[in-house]
Amino acid sequence: MDVQGIVSSTEGFNTVSAVLQAASAGPHAVSAVLKAASAGFNNVSAVLKAASEVLIPSHAVSAVLKAASAGPHAVSAVLKAASAGFNNVSAVLKAASAGSNTVSAVLKAASAGPHAVSAVLKAASAGFNNVSAVLKAASAGSNTVSAVLKAASAGPHAVSAVLKAASAGFNNVSAVLKAASAGSNTVSAVLKAASAGPHAVSAVLKAASAGFNNVSAVLKAASAGSNTVSAVLKAASAGPHAVSAVLKAASAGPHAVSAVLKAASAGPHAVSAVLKAASAGFNNVSAVLKAASAGSNTVSAVLKAASAGPHAVSAVLKAASAGFNNVSAVLKAASA
Image (tube, rainbow, N blue to C red):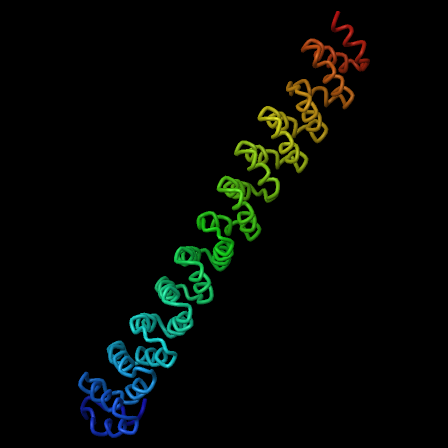
């Protein structure tokens, strides 16, 4: 503070000295000093800076006088703002009450417009001081600012996820935060799923919570319906072959998916047999699994027998269990 501007309450304000100091700066400075004196504000240095900082000095002087009651830091903030050409006194005083970092943040935000300033103040009042994140959010809209503030408590990765989602035009904050808690891969998966619709996003989150991160498989399943998503998640524990089989079976209908899930625990050959049977329109899973356990030849035999009826299928299985694989003979016998 200027030495001549510091006067104790016992001395009173040396207005003559202040006016003489202001005289060289011009009539507006003298007027400012007198206005300040009448308001009981004796920081001559601050008043003179205010009188000289902006195109319309009276605004800055008024700002300094408003700031005076809030303390030296507020006066300093107003002067800093005025020198940057920012005259929103209310915003500066709010920022000043939150600390010097917030003042700097508000001044950074000023060039982006009032909405950005408002976002910075809102963030500061919530204790969130990542100016870069707030300004990015502000450029995406007020909803994204709110989303970033919600994400803040979950950590930087959640904030990053919200901003990434917003830049992709995806504003389902709840989904993004759930994805963020599961990891960056899940965030990417959710964003991929977004274009396919809410059901796909839901499927990805459901899969992630089950520890299944094959996004491609989940999205294929989602396009076939929620039942297929559930089936894929059930199949996941049996391995990739089972997942692949469920996706293949989905086009054949729920019965084929169900058959694949039953076959999954018996191994890839059983899954393959079930799919082969399903594509041939034969849905007796029990028979196919029995045949699969006897070998691929028996599966083929069962499918040949299928058109002749259940008794023929039964005969083929009975013959196979006895080690007799002459299908032609068995079918002839079955028809008799």
